[in-house]
Amino acid sequence: MTKFDETGHASLKGTGLEIDTVVAELRALRLESLENRQRRDKPPKLPSRRALIGIADGLSAVLFPNRLGLPELTDESVDYYVGHTLDVTLRDLLVQVRRELRFVSGLEAASNEDREQASAITREFARRLPPIRRLLESDIQAAYEGDPAARSIDEILVCYPGFTAITHYRLAHELHRLGAPLIARMISEIAHSATGIEIHPGAQIGGSFFIDHGTGVVIGETAIIGEHVRLYQAVTLGAKRFPTDEHGALIKGNIRHPIVEDDVVIYAGATILGRITIGRGSTIGGNVWLTRSIPPGSSISQAQIRNEMFDGGAGI
Image (tube, rainbow, N blue to C red; front, side, top):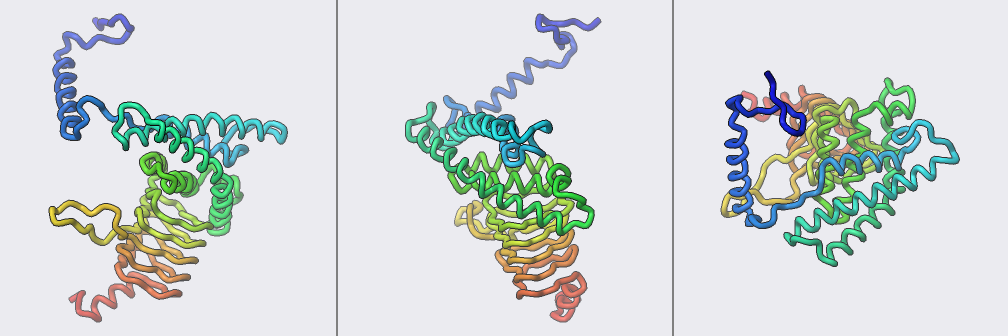
């Protein structure tokens, strides 16, 4: 017969699961980890992923209230809804920015300087929401014009994972620039989990950007993408190698990802690695592996790559 504890949950005592032993071992491992990071007496208080999910949803609703907010909004109520949602969301964001700054400083309590910086970051981020909306409008239009299956602008807003990922990226990118890189990364990873599209918030991406289908797309931290660029599923804009210091540790923050100029199309499965430049107006075919720069107006296919390898002796 199942026994229940005072909370009404089924009791595991007498089942041989040794819960107390597992809890004790996990505690010991936690303390060891904190000791190694010199945080034994002050476990880090990171920004809350759950809170950031709500913040990202709130900001999306503020930007597109009639489609990503409440369905019954009217001309009379929409501004009130946007104002109220923005106020609540920015207050929540301020708390998370303070948490990040406190985590970075290592202090047990937020300093006055951290509080002032968090307020400044949040205020400036709010000012940048209209330009973000303007950029997203260009992204929506690019998706509508670039996909024959798109029957309306509204369909892109509510159905396209690429647009969801781009929205999160554009919000995260501004936070990254303003000095909240951990929160920015967490927001990008929330979109990654939901869409299968990974865009580092440090990447620089111009307007009218379209990711079709999207699953498996990876855009690295130092990638630069121009305007009117279209990517298909499983495209990687990655690093070719990872330099190390004299101790063998990876060097952080070095420039290592491609530059993609305006009006480039990159088809499914293409892998583009290293700090190379894809010239304006070029087309990269599906499943191409590219580690060299190409001039504007190029058209690169798998067959071309294979022929170049054989001509140079590398394929024999």
